[in-house]
Image 1: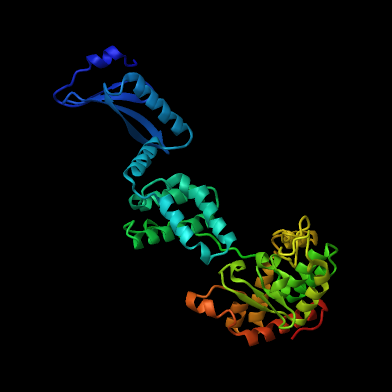
Image 2: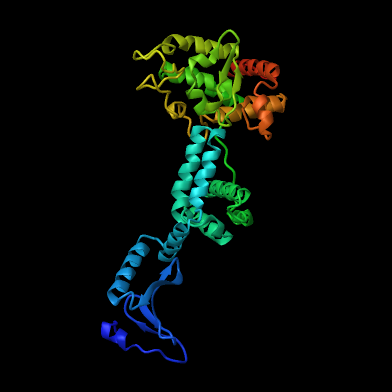
Length: 405
């Protein structure tokens, strides 16, 4: 039977212990031996029974208690925990630093160290999967079970790699907070073996020399636009990530020095990168230059992209340009990707005995020492020039189906 204003007045304390009088939908009032009467709401969240304090009677009337319960029920129906929302409100009221505030500060502090694309992906993951769950909580109050619950929510969607990357980012946020005296420890440190073990997948690539020769002949026979075809032909010769290739600008190409200098802000690790250009790579660029090395739409200061987009010459070609061309040529995502040309070069050059350090430097893989990386973009450059020309000649041999030693 629901409570009434009169029944509330008639509730008298019992000297031996507190007791409850129920209203409806989990709402009840608890009467203590001292005479105080406190409103509570009993609910379940993620299978666990919880209780929410709604204030003292008569300061909070029966109608007000029911209104508060209704509001909490709405939050629960939206998948939110009313008790957690209450805690977050207290955090904000006390001026305690939330996880989201510290995370945004940390990510802002390292933004310059990474490419815009990488930074955007990290921020998007945090905004989608982390901030809605723990963002408003005080960072110093978060414990390992809180982080494990968060990560399990993500792995239940089957995106195990996303969960792993999010844990890495959260760990970095906690370490940043600890270093600045805003947290006591990193609660993710106890979770290293808590996530499901997943098999590492690599970008699909063709490393069999015979099949690689077939791919190169298919590229030469491709009937798409000269821009896309040129990008396809150049991709195997320069070892670049698709985003680094498609955003190339003519002022980065030095035909006299036979090299392509990519500025730091375009590279994944934010370090200038030199690509020695083989005779074959230079021929491709010289064929393309009359078509795209021009001022467009009366904007003389606009970037002159080597591979401009099909809809606007003021933008680079789509990041799916090379990938779509491969699909149109009949190569599935399990066989070859635009990124796969890097794996091809790394695998076969190592097999042929080229210097591992020269290969890694040409692939622009990250340097463990940030100080070393800042100065070593030209490291092994003479050997890399020789290697890049040898590689181009080797690919010509595969394309011509010549016997390989």
